[in-house]
Amino acid sequence: MTNTSDQNLILETVERLCQTEIPNYQSEAHYNTVPRKLFQSLCDVGLGGLSIPEDFGGIAASATTTAAIFDTISRFDVGPAVFLSVHTMVTGLISRCGNPSQKKEILPRMASGEILGAFALTEPQAGSDARSISTEARKTEGGFLLKGNKCYITSAGFADLYLVFAQTKSDSTSAISAFLVPGDTKGLSIGKPEKKMGADLSPIASLFFEDAFVPDSALLGPLHEGFTVATSGLASGRVNIAACANGLSDSALRIACKHLRERSQFGHPLAEFQGLQFMVADMHQRLQAARLLTQKAAEDLDATRAQAGASANVKLSSSTAKCFATDAAMSITTDAVQLLGGAGYIRDYTVERLMRDAKMLQIVEGANQIQRIIIAREILELASKIGS
Image (cartoon, rainbow, N blue to C red; front, side, top):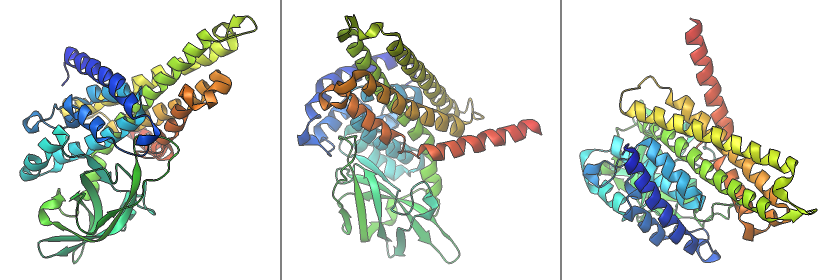
């Protein structure tokens, strides 16, 4: 989906849905849950199939349209945007790496909302260093036995299908392989949802595998090539997280401006104080720069997928967008809390939640320190090519 009118239509639909549906779940009753009815509502307007081909019930949205959708959802609440972003990454990986049988069996059910997907890579001693995972998949008759545990897994306990990465071995090889593991697999248990700082509607928990059997058909992609499967989804995930940060920043800036117009001190609206105007100007600049970087990264991703711009450095642009946009969100939401003064520290005024959510975005999909390493390496490599 790249047509501008189509994009505008789905964005209008998404905005109306978020306005009417999301407030119903922003309460203690739904804390640390993935509300199934909300996920179904998102899927009913096509969002479960953003990265699924039309032949399998999806809408095959462009990266540009997908980013705009996550920006829109995050203006209302970043939690649903995060669990939907992870679901979208999983469906994208199955669409690209799955065999015909897997695509036919799984993708239509993920597009319709019957199946919620989760991505299970991180472990207690392996986060950014993904090659160091210790979960094992031992070959047995007809399949594999999974043993180990994962942590901080988005939608754990609510997902129906987990894309799990584990070490596989042969006589001379030890590498990572990817497996599609149903949530009701015997030998798989789920820990309690973690009590997080923010993102209340995007729970995370641990997965524990005790000789959990999965058949040979659960293998996603070739044996021992799971690391390639995992990394192939990173660019799109980072673009989507950047978009989430932008929507969150937009909401914080709007709330702050409304407060400055409505509250007066010393006989004047706060909006007339030059020092506060400077803060608003800086917030606006950071948001606009972040949105342009995100748009550029999404366009690079679309060009690469279409083979028209295969030379585009998607790794560089996606890491740049993710790092800058999420850092900007942290700064913008912090300033929004400051601009609201005492009200900014009170939950009823929302900006304190936005500030807590922004911190999460600096960490997920590769912490921003990792993004800076990637950016520096890519820039230095480009410089060496130019120099030679």
